[in-house]
Each structure stands twice: as structure tokens, then as C-alpha cells.
Amino acid sequence: MVLARGVEVADGIAELPRDIVSWLEETTGLPLIRALRIPGGGVRQGWFVDFRQPDGSTRELFLRHSPEPESPAFHRLATEAEIVRALGEAGARVAKVHAVHPTLEAVLQERVEGGTWFSRIHDPDEQVRVAQDFIRQLAYVHRLDPSRLRVPSLGPVRSAREHALERIQAIRDRARRPDGSLDPLVRLSADWLERNVPDYEGPVVLVQGDTGPGNFMYRDGRVTAVVDWELSHWGDPMDDIAWLSLRTVQDTFTHLPDRLAEYAELSGHKLDEERVWYYRVFAETTMATLRPEEPGTRQPAQ
Image 1 (cartoon, rainbow, N blue to C red):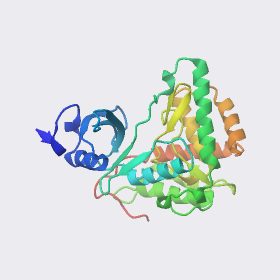
Image 2 (tube, one colour):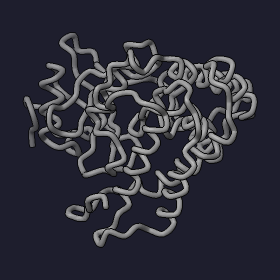
Image 3 (cartoon, rainbow, N blue to C red):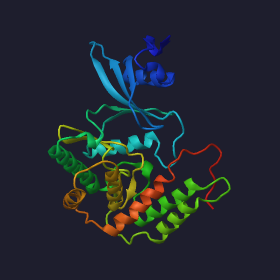
């Protein structure tokens, strides 16, 4: 069997949809010679895709592809690509976006070298260097003026309170059952979040969401790219600190108080423990509603 432009089905290419293979080859102008799906990612798949260049060398890129419906909490890949492009233009360490499929959930990006799981770094000194470099990247993003980032898909930048209330309503909408009811725990959490939005009037930042070990890549003691921006939004900088504190429970991340002190110094954002705890509840409630939407079950807000 042969797929787009005469490429024989081999090396994982047959596992990709035919229209995706055709788009990849049309986009790059090169034949696809190998496709390897990397572990993890759930519905949002990651693929190493290799192309043969005219001189016989290989061009190595990275494909993100979602063949099935995802949670409505996640941005579409086109929106995430818009965010990553804006960050790259602003000097943040992210993977370059080469192309976005016009209709399907697929984005072609630069392939960045490095590992993902922080716990696989066995040298304690290297762990600290990588963790410190990640904190530098997070602080850099939090110092960016959101009004200067070209991300129209996220809408206008408003106050942290307004963004929080908007996202609480989105939690209710996602969690609503066909009969209009909510899971009691989600309702309790959403009501509490609404009553206790922090009285914060400081700078709004681009929050990555779900930030920390596992969502950045590293090599040779430094971060090579911060990845996975599908939950990013405008908001309170302590929102990301809450996510970081949660992810460090899953994967070691050196001594967190040291890293947070470095963050405060580098970012200029003073740490506020009460706001961090608030956004930890927010993160947990968000995760409780990260299930793919069942066709025909979405109910209007009431």
C-alpha cells in the first residue's frame, strides 16, 4: 500500500490518518519517511515525524494531533499554537510552530531535544540547575506585558477577578449533567471559589496552567522548551505557583521553598500563600472537570 506522494507505508506512517500525512507533506514540501508516536498525551497525541530532504538528509519535526474530541477545558491546538507563537516572539523558550492545520486538530512544530520527567535526572546538582532554569523561564513569562502578547483567542486582558469568575462559570458549564444538575462536590467547590475570589488588584499575567515538572523539557542542565499550554489563560501569577506546587507532589522538584524564593526575586511578584491555596482548590476543581464532552450532553448554563 502507498500513501501520499508515493511514500510506502512503513515506520509508523500507516498509523497516522491519510489526510494528516498529506497535509504534512504538502506543508513541508518533503516526503514523510517515518512517524513515531511518543508515549503519553492521552487524546492529544505527540509524534516524531521525519522527512527526507533533497540532499538525502533527514528533517526532524514534531506533530501534535488530536483525532478525537477533547475536554472543552483545553484550548484547540490552533489556539495553543497562537499562544506559543506569541511567546516565542516575546523571547520565551518554547518550540517553534511551523504550521497549523486549517480544519483538523494538528500542529507541526520544531522538535526540541531533551527529556521530560524530572525524576530521571539522577545528579542532584543537575536537578537544581534544571529547576532553577525552569523558574527563570516561568518568571520571564510572568514579567511579560500581556497586552503586548498577540493572542486574540484569549480575549481582552481584564482584572484577575474577572478572569477567575469567567473560569468558574466555565467549570460549572463543563460539569453540568444532561438533567442540569452538578456533581455535589464540584458544586460545593465552585460555590466556594466564587465566594472567595482573592482581593488582588496586581498585574495580570499569562498563566500556563498545569505548569512544572513534566510540562517542560530539559537537557544538559537547562530547560530546552516549556511545553503544554492547553490550559493557559490570563490571570493571577499565584495561579501558576499553585499548579507548580501540585505538580511537585507528583514529581520531585528539589526544595520548593528555595525555588519559590527565586521566583519571587526574578519575577517581581510577591508570594501570597493564601492566594496559592485558593488556586490549588481552583486547579483541583478544574481537573475534576477535564473529561471529554459526550456528544449531545452539553447543557446551557442555568
